[in-house]
Length: 156
Image: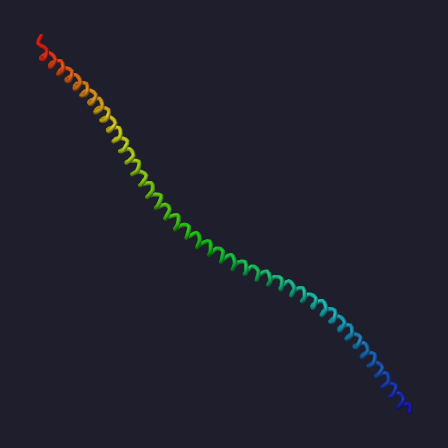
């Protein structure tokens, strides 16, 4: 019996030793599980932070793309408007050149008219003086003629 009891004690000691080892393993596993759980929580929090930052960056990228698209439309409109204004400017420059040429012609015509007007005034003055002279000569001739008729009709 003692043999049996010794074997039983030995088996009991072995089992107790295994139980202690198993409890120690369980405690180690619980500690590891707790560490893993905390690590998981930290990683999940970091993941949420990264997701938030990524979402903000995606939103900013989308806003930048929208702004770029809007800017391209504005630039295209301004380019078109600039082209229209350049065409208008060219047309106005042509009109300006034509008007300047017409102005030169008008100035030349005005100068010619002024010269012609001065010549006509000079001729009018000359003719007016000539008419006065001729009237005076006519008056003198009429007077001389009357004097001659009066002398002939009046025999001394």
